Image 1 (cartoon, helix red, strand yellow):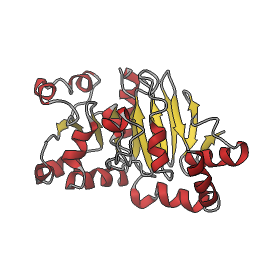
Image 2 (tube, one colour):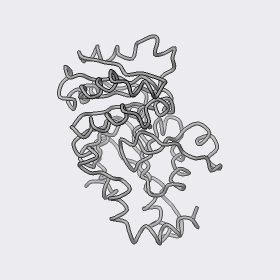
Image 3 (cartoon, one colour):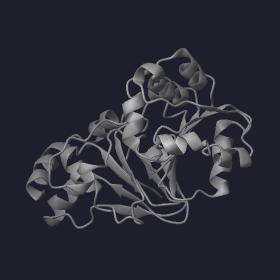
Image 4 (cartoon, one colour):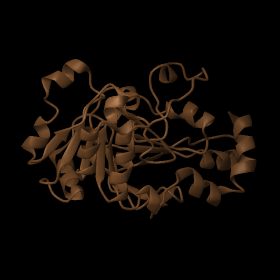
Length: 282
């Protein structure tokens, strides 16, 4: 990895400002500056996070859409994924679910997203979401929802799907093998997102991904902990930690020390991180 980083050190340090602007792609046209994301590392979610979700949506009476597609067919059939939201006072809940991309293009599904102020992705298997919605009209409408100032929240698999690439499966099990990382929904452009990071001892799982895609920023949330993204920054919410992996900083470490000593930084509740500058907000 050191030889590789020596190469990217010469390339990226010279073009750092331009690279950040292009690779992360945060702009008004993308909707990120108006929209909000709540990206949760899995585990149980406190009531207060549901209240924040409702506030960012403009009120719990606004239409929200739950996308339970990451769940198994058996769990979806039980239809319990709405219960907590109903108990928390959300009064206008719709569901969009399919295993078929052609159905993701149906007018009835597109209209639900168009009329919503908030979207929630459940946990499960993130590849199920990508298989059903990537490149569809529903996918387009999710980005438009952010552009008009809506909010999208997801936990566990529903968190990972918001990044640019997916991590999981064989890529996690065999980090030494160069397995392609499939695309995610890219709702937070220029990132690769992981979850359950400390609870499941995953703090090194993003390193092989970023070795292959050093222009991306890695962000991993522990359970019961989230990042709330707004205006090109995120704030940490919850009792545990968020880990940030910055290959540009890796290159600086190699230049300064000859090797990487700190592959990630840890942020705790209330700390803020600037996604454009790639640094902690003081």
